[in-house]
Image (cartoon, helix red, strand yellow):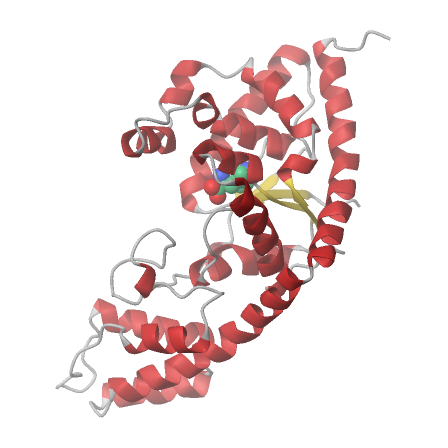
Length: 332
Ligand code: TRP
């Protein structure tokens, strides 16, 4: 039986952090054996904010290097740049005729961007969900591993697929967000407020490109207190967060020993943070070094992108031919 199709796009802006690793990349790596995976750098999407051409290229290379460093295998999946697949903008154009201004203006991510950047409300921003739909449907993707913030976009993709099928005949399957269920883990921010994020407090987020000293400094600043005074007392949320971080990168024995220290009130958070910092370094440093080495080897990145695009174009060409025919664009 042929494998089911998975499609997901990776933003090319900003550095990847530990939250991205546990929320997205680790899951991509888990899927690569069981599904037919198309993972791409969403470089066209990033043009909505008009990045500097020099930065665009470096960002795309970095995203590829970081994903491969995290375990994504370009021989198992198609890893490519969105802009290398001309069938995507072609399908985007077709879908734009089925997408209505009113529904696009109601999308919460669009409304947020309008509020934040009222001077740059361009048509690309408005039709962002249509381009995303084209990304998915071009491979007839069924499963779309995305975070909560993107689920509404996938729902729109489902609506546009239905609309196309209704008008022109059954061409596209309906895509659904892929839920990792119990594997979804929280990666708390180091300041005790919410999750790690690339746009909020940068000092409370560990990036996969952070050097050892930076990791140590950030971890040592993690919010703690003077420790519990009664045995087996409940942990305040910011302490639960520190233990959650230990759970992600430390050994079971380390976690157990600090948990015991907490419960009998002998815990020293300075020691805990030192251990956490070293375990974070042991976790992040190999990924960082591998990504760094790859970024220095441009020909390797170029080879990955070229091979990924070649694989993706086979599937994209077949789909676009079908879509053209369904619409009636087959003149000779
Ligand atoms: N919009 C997604 C994000 O911001 C990235 C993305 C673009 C995407 N196209 C996609 C995700 C297609 C899944 C499928 O994270």
